[in-house]
Image (cartoon, rainbow, N blue to C red; front, top):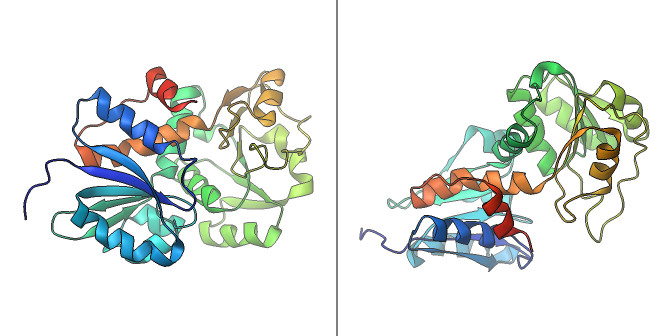
Length: 277
């Protein structure tokens, strides 16, 4: 097979115009002087398989996958990483020159890297983590926290059966608590994580009472539009260490960029500036 000389990558979703991934990867391509491009690909669910299988023939070395395709993309891969299998969703596809498609999920890696960079004093073993939400992002977060040996993960979701299903999958380290009682657990949480869309621009506010927040806790919100959510603002007022959600987006792109373009990129202030509006 002819060696690809102008590698291409992109992000597949529907809709996709809002994605910041093109800004991120284009920034890294420019920074490292790599000939190539990264483009948004708006693909309807019915066309996912046809498009994915055609991309390598068009010079693509890989693609990120976002809503609503993260689960369906699993079935298109020839090889799926252990963490993507555990999470049950894919966010990164790599196209090999022999025709195989590799699938991975780097969301948990991005979450932990963001915490380590922006809350370096946090010790995973220092106490429980309180996680809000039980969707795909929560699955990646719970998997990463379990791997980091967080002693207990308190999981609250507005629909309790969905949280219980995650507990059954991830084991005894996860304790399900009622959403309306979550605020009572804030005092014992060394880490508080919002994986829901609450607080996002255009969505409902995050209305959980935050009176119990402790100033020695770390609070992070996966929402990054706005960058300083109501949750983070309240946590800052208490004196907590806060970590915004943009860093997770930046860090989850690192392994993918390295696989596709052969250069491990750096996440720094210039990277953040390139991605923000």
